Length: 294
Image 1 (spheres, helix red, strand yellow):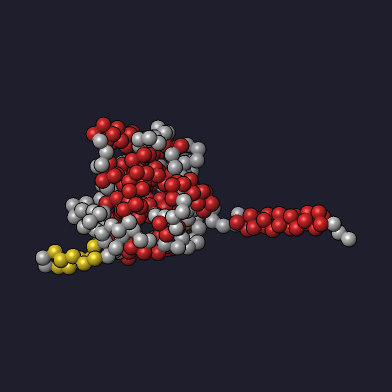
Image 2 (tube, helix red, strand yellow):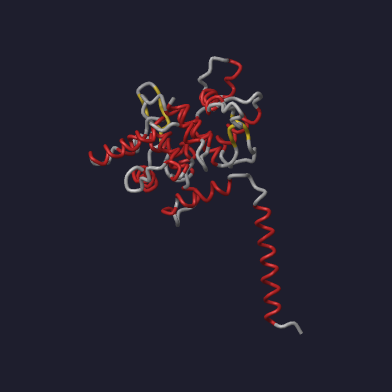
């Protein structure tokens, strides 16, 4: 009769084999997705115990930084956030392994002259991201990062390309945040018209986001962009490009504020071409940075 030890050994072997098969199957998933999830896991060590619904995309984080907590809308004078949110979408898709830049080639084409290519059309689960991905996949010949930011935001003079515009982006992102329990929905009367607003209801998530941004340039500053979490690095650049970064720095003391802004300026003074050429860099991320800082 087979001993208990032998049966247990066989069971372990079968479980091990099943695990190997599962791992092999996982490797067939979208390239970059595992790396994306691991980065999210590292970034969200503070969020253990929170549900997945409270994890925010880059677009949602930038919008949340720009929203007035009580009023529930972004500044009427902010004309940068629209294009900034489109930049967020391109980087989010790149970090999830859906987009990449074409090869630089023998002539070493610049980041802004290289086309955006669809690496995978697997759904992301986010309607805005999937809509942008569909446009990019179906467009031939491919467009550059700068062109896609303009096309997705509707800033094009070509009437044949107006269909690329993603409409009501801020409202759709705000509704996502309502579903995640971060915002609520109200109606406010502005003399001649009523406007839907989305005041903050979960201050904990907003404060966690603000603290993360502050710490990235204060206590947790590493002074080497290639060592920074790519999502956090992108958030700093895009929050600045969307003119909402100072909202996160407003609560700081004067000396902290000055130090934070000095370090942000250090990032803004980086040369995207050189940073993109470094090991482990995400080229599309730096192409978006180049589009906003050129």
